[in-house]
Length: 146
Image (tube, rainbow, N blue to C red; front, top):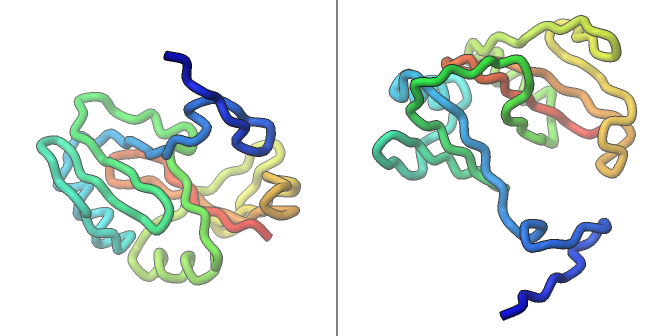
């Protein structure tokens, strides 16, 4: 049997081009992670299985899974795209989330917020964003195209 490949837009073809994508984040302490995502981010578990917590969002999902491995947290492991970054900043700061500060060539945060020129031009000309770490050390980003 031969599977038909369809052009999926933007020059992408292939069967995975039509697939949904979901993030998997490791946790050394699943209950600690559950509390963080509930108390700090306001997210509730949609489904629980032995060793894993599924979170469903408006567009997409992610799983936090029990792991003996630890995240290096040196790069963005999951990112949220939001429509109102300032509102999200205010809410998360009110909940006690601490934002990461960066000062590297091409990326410097000011009070935890960065503005990047030409980031994903198809979504806008620029992007504003910030990063924080969850209870397990995973580096999470939040951004808004502007």
